[in-house]
Length: 175
Image 1 (spheres, one colour):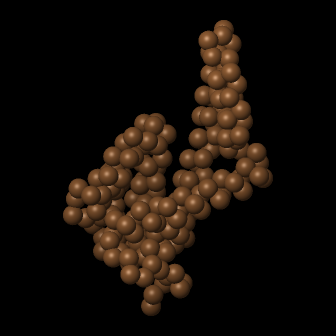
Image 2 (cartoon, one colour; image 1 turned 60 degrees about the horizontal axis):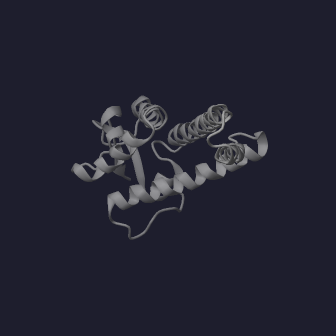
Image 3 (tube, rainbow, N blue to C red; image 1 turned 90 degrees about the vertical axis):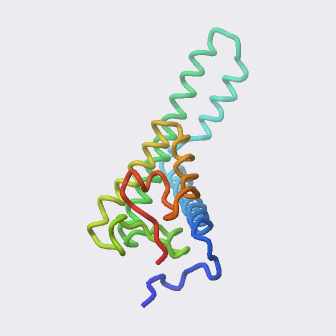
């Protein structure tokens, strides 16, 4: 039985395009979650970061500029950290509920599994969680550049595995 609940991208053949589309769908969902979180809690507060950046631009070259820059970077760090926490939570929770898929992957008929397995099993859970941890670590500690390189590695190997998949021992398969 097809467990896509009526969803699926018909006619999209390229695994790479499916992964890109799944990423875009998940990014839109995360943006909606961020908007809801901001409306309910006031965080992540990118609006205050923007005001702080504008203030910094207005006082460039003055003695107060360094303090304003420190404040702006602290505000951005908190907002970015909160954003990554929401993305991580979304990815892990949805992957567990949807057995290796996020909603974007589910729509594109993709699933994350442990590399040495043929399908989803609960033994894949630690690998799927590790994959999300590695992704967030790349984005937070290494400013996203390794994440970009990791994504580009999909084009360089026959299994279409991203660098984060190599770290976590996972692969993305067609369902």
